[in-house]
Image 1: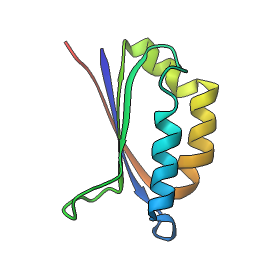
Image 2: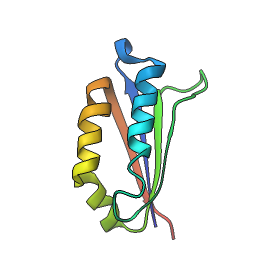
Image 3: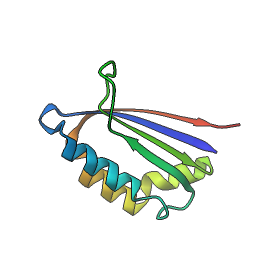
Image 4: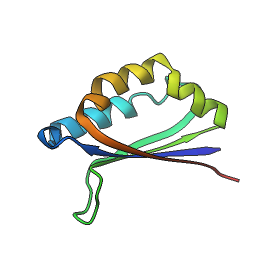
Length: 98
């Protein structure tokens, strides 16, 4: 299994509950659509000690499944429509569970 963690900082003008819910709902709707995607969750309620606005936690059956997710047309559509226009920075950490 592979875990894929993303942290985003939203552009200040888009740091709203509505934008956060749009990101959450659109990404979480990919479950059951993309082969090898086992789990996906977006956290929108951060503590004030956080330096990111959103977190994506996802689990894939393999490295190949994660690679397929990154180019899958449904994922690309969601990222281009609901994520990239609103974010100023992104950090990623992927790791294999042994």
